[in-house]
Length: 524
Image (cartoon, rainbow, N blue to C red; front, side, top):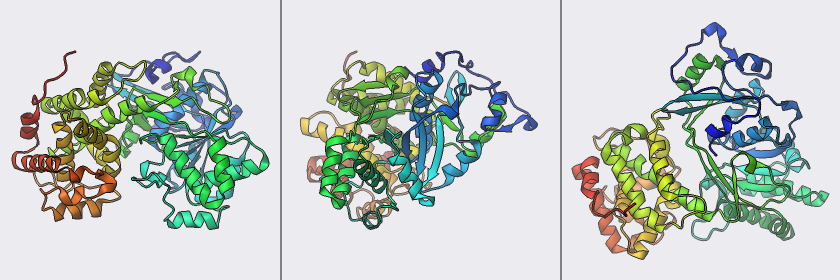
């Protein structure tokens, strides 16, 4: 069930119709978003009808960003709105920036979600977040919150790099200044693992059941990653504690999906003009939403299955479907489109050559590698992806898709390429995506205009591209933490080098056209 369907079935509070034309609100009628103004705002958008003061703070979420507010929080909000339960309120925790606290606290932790489609948009105020803490301000309060017997689940959106796992071994990397601090000062942690392990230790000593840890990050077996990181950190403190965590704490893997671009100041102003709500940080998103979670919990399972979440015994097939089709396509289109001078994915998809490229890459090179998930038709899923990419109401920035390539490429695109090479399957379009990334790392598009490389390893990546004089991929392929053994496959290295040279010589569009049709599509 999508949120469009969920919104349309609210008990006693029908969803407002899609608004297709812009209606301007007079500046004098624009009001702040607070509990006190909800009655006023309810005339123009959906607002909570449940008693927010009756919510039990049972979920703590680390790293509240736009995606969490457009995705997981809406499911919990729906539980409260449908009167299924008031026992699953959410408390947010930030570790690195106080901007979210500064935005949410003055508006009683309320915020607006605007769902946009080509047909129009809907807006909804979410009220299920009951509090927010910036941990460095008061670590004791956050630890008390995590130790509170009412806290039954902790969720994470800390990005793949946040788990501090060695790419080759999957072992927790303790060589970090903040980790050393957390070991010395367990009552004043700096990292999410310091908080989780100290709180779990306190719960163990108090005889309280542990909370469930649910990773919502885009990475392979994210539950296993969370387990490895938490248990790995605990082992540095106390082997008995580590064993207790390994035996009694559930770390279900999950797959999450909803395209959520960064909210610009212009978007905030547009929300204010259209709905009369002065929201310091609204969220813009698409109608589609999906959440699949393994059915393993330590301390009670939230009734998320009643609001569209799918509980499964193993999330692996759903995760592969999403990361290798959606996320890998985002990577490929991000780099190719940026080189071609595009700025948003919808304008890119309006060009037939890009739409044909990503469709053929998914059909011919990726889908044959995927075991189909139960209850999902992959052809339908791919058609939905193409429509989502082309949604002009979202206009997702390619710069967002290109961020953190050193993390995204090895998690999302390179596994399909490696598997295709190992099995002797077609891989030219996947190779072309890697070549586009190499060219992008030069720091300019095909017309010489600068592009910003937003990556924690940007300096190293760009120095290795320069070492290869822009066309030789061998220096960069030598980064085994990203590419594994791909650099040892001389046939692949030559294919990649040829694709890089062709992109630089002929440009993106000619190169794409040359590659399309080289493999026969499977018949539908």
